[in-house]
Image (cartoon, rainbow, N blue to C red):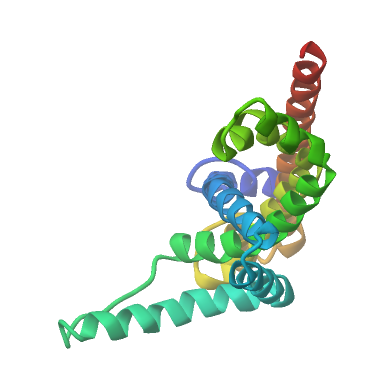
Length: 237
């Protein structure tokens, strides 16, 4: 038992500081990916609602591709394919240049496009839940399309889409574990290193489970607080 506490301690003999740094990387990656995914997802949802056939087709193709591919395969394509593509471009100007794609950036891009493809469906469903009379009433008041979206539609859209986006955030938090395969020192990679060095796989993978569960519970509390705040604001109106 004493050996277990030594392994779980902070300091040169323990691994908790490494796991904590991995947790920080995991949280940073998820938070960096979130706004990118939300923005792209919203734009894709607008494209799929567009009357322009080419925009609608592009939005449908985008979501079909990134919802259909496994997240791990998307990560490999972005990491290795991006490295090759950028390397080819750079070598046009400098034949001796060596290019290496940052694991954090590759993970952020890969998870961002997957997250955005699911976000677009949540936003699209939220758009459909808003009655057409909301648009007609805003136009009757003389509001432009931009002001109608910002002042009338967007507040309702956020309220309707929030439960679905909350679930996607929890999925994103778990999907960050995939970046361990491209060398990013997240929770899972740090736990794997500790397990191999100490031969205590159950201990450290169990600890990784607890950390992910703790992050999920904290996220759930925060998301419920946001939902309650949005409901109070709606009631105040």
